[in-house]
Amino acid sequence: MLLQYAERLKLLGTETAFAVLDRITSFPPERQHHIISFALGEPDFNTPDHIKRAAISSINANRTHYTPSGGILPLRESIAEFITESKHLKVNAQNIVVFPAAKLVIGLAILTCTNPGDEVIYPNPGYPIYESMIKTFGCKAVPAPLLERNQFNYDTNTLRDLITTKTRMIVLNTPNNPTGSVLNNQNLEAIADMALEHDLWILSDEIYSNIIFDNQKFHSIAELPGMQERTIILDGFSKFFAMTGWRLGFSVTNPQLATTFARWATNLISCTATFIQDAGIVAMQEPKEESLAMVREFQARRDLIHKLLNEIDGISAVKPRGAFYIFANVTKACQNLGLKDSIEFQDYILDKADVAILSRTYFGARPPDENDHFVRFSYCISREQIIEGLARIKQAVENP
Ligand code: PLP
Image (cartoon, rainbow, N blue to C red; front, side, top):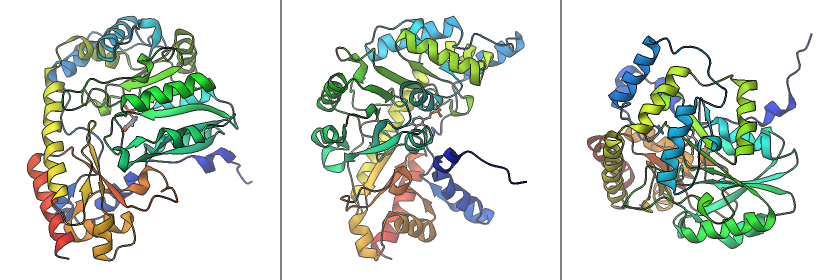
C-alpha cells in the first residue's frame, strides 16, 4: 500500500537557520565550545524571576485546567491596557486573542483572510515562515524588497507596482528580522493608502516592537486613520520578556476577527496553558525594569557591533533601529576572498574563524536585481563575545 500525503506539503517551508545549528552540533565538543554564535534569534537573558514565580504559584494553586479558547479575561484585559499605552491604539479585551505562540497568528491570518489563488505580499529579506504559510495555504507569495539604500525600508513605488486585483494582504514586520529596520512614517502612510485604496488586509508582525532604540516611539500602521479594522497585529511575550520557551503570544484585531481566531483556537488547541497565561498577567502588569534594562543592553551591543563591523575591510552595515539583528553587506569581502556568495561567506567564517552567522538566503530568495551579498548577525551574546567574534572575523577577512 502506498500512503498518500497532501500535495500542499511540498510547499511547507522551514526555518533553515536550524541547519547551521545542526552543523555546529556535529562538531567535536571542544570545537563546539570554541564557536561564537551570532545565529540564534532569542534573547540570551532569562525570564524575570517575578514572572517565573507567578507560573509556579499558579501551578501550585492547581490552575491546571482548560480556559476559554481566546484566553482568560484578566490576561486579555492586561494585554489590551499594555497595547493601548505602548501602541497608542484604543483596544479592549474583545480585540485580543491569546495563543501558545505569536507565530500561530501568521498562519491563522492567512487562513482566515485569503482564498487559494489570492496574492499576499511579504517582506524580502524577511522571516521565512511568511512565505511558507502563504504558499502552503494556496496563495501566491509575492516578495517585496526591503532595500539597503532605504535603510531597509520599502521603495513605495515598487511596492505599489506589486499590487494586482488578486492582492488580498500585505505582511509587514517592524522592527524587522533580519535587518533590524523600523518602517518609517512615510512607508507606513503609503502602505496604509494602498490598503485603503485596494481594500487589503495588513498582517503587522510587531513581535519586536518593544525592542526599539534611540528613544524612538514605535508606530503601528494600525494607528493610522481607517487602519485598525483591517490590521491584524501579531505580538507576544517571547522577545521583550525573554520568554521564548514559554510559548505565549497574541493577536490584536477587530472584534469580529477576534471571535473567528478564538474559534480557530477551539478547533486547534482548545486553549493556551492556564498557568502560563497567569504568568502573562504578571508580566504585563508588573514594572518592566528587567525588560527595559535588556533593551538598553541590546542598544549598547548594537552600537558596538555596528562600529566593529564597519571597521572590517570589505564589510559595511546600516545601523539597525530595533530588534537584535544587524544585516551586514559583505559584497566586497566576498570579492576580496574569492567567495561566490553569502552562503560561501557564512561557511568560510564558520570554518576559518569558528564564528556562526546566517546567510541572507535563509530569509528569502535574492531578487534577480539584488547584486549585493548580506549576512545576518544576531547579537544575543555578551559584549565580550561580540568583541572576540568580530576580531576573529576581521582576521579571517583581512588576513586570509
Ligand atoms: N515573527 C518574527 C519576525 C520572529 O522573528 C519570530 C521569532 O523569531 C516570530 C514571529 C515568532 O515568535 P514566537 O516565538 O513568539 O511565536
